[in-house]
Length: 253
Picture (cartoon, one colour):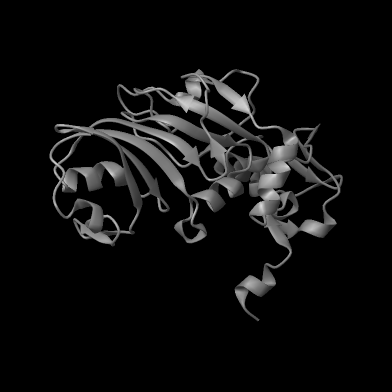
């Protein structure tokens, strides 16, 4: 029997706790080891259990409620990192979130010099789905650059590029404005590799002055002000999940 068949219908208890906003997976494993987690009224020290057998879960005598997927749009300002782990002289965008927001993760990232749409969710598995290149989720950016447009530029971006040994898929680029050596591009990509647009622009000798994400999959930045957050209505979240074949039952428990 294959390992994946043995695990069919099972779920890691630490995953449930982290998705429910209790703590990180590593912290959850410590809670389980130390006997602070009860399942169906009994202390549970295993790490994997059957989904269908779960009735109640308690952590330190507090009942864990079954979660529904929630999504937020956040307009990230320049100068903040997308990670909740801050390096020296860095400030995380998570510091800007209202205290009423539950434990969330970002869907994709924007580097410290970039701005615009960040999608946040309480469901890490939804984040994983939208980030995977195989799912072809479109990201749209407005990019301001300085430099001369090479003769082969518009045809080159329609083909895959190899830059420093990394393969980048073709993408769609529209020139929205062009005056002398200053240009405004609209770029659609489907991978979201680390600093992808900046590396491609640098490859063509452009200097990026401003990079702003305005769409990610089904969600748009719209008129959301810088530093502000907006929760997507429950009905729209359900429509989005259904469109992409995502079920809460598949990702929570």
